[in-house]
Every structure is written in structure tokens, then in C-alpha cells.
Picture (cartoon, each protein chain N blue to C red):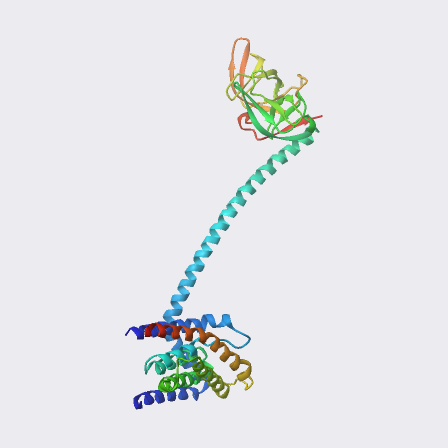
Amino acid sequence: MRYVFLSLLFFILSVVADFLLSPVFRLGTSRPEFLLLFVYFISLYRGRWYGLVYGFLSGFLLDLHNPESLGIRIVVFTSIGYFLQEYRDRFYRYRPTSLLLLFGASIFYHFFLVLFSPLPFSSLFTRGLPSSLLDLLFAYPVFLLILLRKSRDEV
Amino acid sequence: MRRGFFVYLTLVLFGVFCMFLKERIRVDFARELSSMLFYPFSRAYLEIKERSEAKKKAELLSQKCAYLSLKLQHMRELAAENERLRKLLQFRHKYSFRLIPCEVVASIPHGVNVNYILSKGKKQGVDKEMVAIGYYGLIGKIREAGTHTSILQTLFDFNSSIGAIDQRSRVFGVLRWKGGDFLFFEGVPSEGDVLPGDTIITSGMGMVYPKGIRIGEVVEIERKDVEIRVKVKPFENMRGLEEVFILTP
């Protein structure tokens, strides 16, 4: 139960960060996607249903904010959440290289956006790629925190 | 695994269904749903925002109110000053004297006499025996003049005596102070035509005060055997002077 509340708290924090903090770190048209980071971490490091439920909720929320492309983010975020939590045992998630998964997920998200929304293909490189790099940049400190916590738990 | 996949498939299908809805329906649906979901939050946010803005506005308005009230006071002062200066201008046209405005710097606690120190002296053209007037009438004369200050002897001084006449009946007399807030118009014979409400002006006979400067108004008359005792209230408030004008030829 504690984890449910904690995850809900982090979800709310991510929503706030995505809507309020993200524009602060904007670089041109690209910006960090805090909700994607949340879905990534909750899927890899929490229980079975977390990725699926929070992936869907995050996507739905973002779609409500962009009603012209309703559905795209639901599909993408739910898929990212589901597949990451489903196959998380196959990755060694406590290695920094696991962050490449996040990079892949972010690229997949932007590719999907380009595919199903009126965005031009070039935006994959002008917006998608820098956003993915920004995601990596913000994910790394969180990853280090998780590592720190794990090492403490082991001691 | 199977249950999870089934749920995943349902959610994704819902997303795909949304994706292929007509744009208008999609937008309407999203708007309806978001307004329903976020209404309490947006309402609370707006409420907080409005309250904080109202508080700021109230603070700003109270500041503005204080500022305007100060400005109003200042304007009133200016209006009063304007009025006084207008009167003075008329006076100046009438007598063609040069006027030196002086501020009252301090009062002199000199027994019961009411005397003041003025902000100007010989350097500024103020000299002994020069006449001081106010906006409404005669105040007194310069008793002593220093380089940058001077001492004003008002009408409320035991040593002061002024030759004066009744403006209406042209009856002569001498104005003296005997304490209090009134002057006494003395030397008027008992048959002299002086009535309450008459204006007393300088006679110009003492060689100090020019003729025709308003001094005060007759308020009370007491008839005696050989002369009458006339009580005069000066037009100027001798006990609360702030600025005076010195007449120079």
C-alpha cells in the first residue's frame, strides 16, 4: 500500500513537472518529458501492473492536453509501460547502459508522433532526438539515486 | 502474463479507437473529459489565484489611496496658498510696495509680548522699523535686523502703539495692546463715531506704518465720561504666524 501512495505521489509530481517545469528547460522545440521518465522508472523498478496503469494514465493525460492527437500517447505510453515491466527481468537494470532503453523509448514515442500526427518527419531529428537526449540527462541523476538506495538496502 | 496482455490490449485498442475518431469528436470528447476531470483543480487554482490577486490589488489600492490623500492635502494647501497670494497681489497693486516674503523661524519667549525671529535680515533687504504684514492685515514691525535674521515685533507687544483711524468715520486714535487677544483703540472722544464692525486701518501719522493698512475690526465699545474704550480684534492671528511679508519702499 505504501508503494501505491508513493507511486501516486511521484506521478502527481511528474505531472506537475511535465506541465510546469518542462517549459523551463526547453531547448528550441525540444523539452524533457518528465512523464515519460516516470513511466520508464516505474516500469523498470516497480511491480507488474505499475508500468501498464501509469503508462496509460500518463498517455491519457497528455492526450487530453493535446486533443488533436488523442490516442497516440495512450498507445505509446501504455506500450512502453507494458513492455518495459513485462521484460524488465531480461535487462540488467542497475547498469547505466539500461538508460539506453529510455532513449529507445523516447525515440519510439517521437517516431510514433511523426507517424500519426501532422508533424513533419524532420521533427524526429529537430525535436525528437534532442528531447531524448534531455530525457537521458534528467534520468541519470534519478538512476544514481536508485543505485544509491539499492546499495544501502544491500548493506 | 495473459491477463496483463489482455489489459494492455484493451487499453491500446482504446487508444487506437481514439486515434481514428473524427477530429471534431476527438477534440470535443477530450475537452468534455478534461473539463470534467480537472474542473475542481482548475477551480481551486483560479480561486487561489484570484484571492492572491485581490489581496495584491487591495494593497495597491490602499497605497494609492494613501498617496492620493496626501496629494489632496497638498493640493488643498496649494489652493489656500493661491488664495492668499491672490489677495496679496491685490494688496501689492494697491500700495505699490516691494514685498519680501519671510518665514517665521522661531518665536521669542520674551515675557508676555508676542515676538518672532524671521528668516531674513539686512543681507536680504530687511531692516529695522520696516513694516510686516500678513495676508489679511498688519502684523507689526521689525524691531532689530541682523545679517540673515530679524526680530519681528507684533502688535501684541506692550511697547507697540500705532496711529490708526476708523475706515468708515475717519476717527483718529491710537492702538495699543494690554494683553490678551485684542487691541484697544484709545484716544477716541466720547462723541466719536465708532461702531462695532468698523474696520480700523493705519493712519500713516506715526511715520512708521504707511496709511491704509487694515489692522482689525471693532468688536466692542465701552463709553466712558470723556472717551470711549474700543476693543479691536486684529485680522491676523498673531499667535500662529508662519510667514510674513516685509514692506520695503
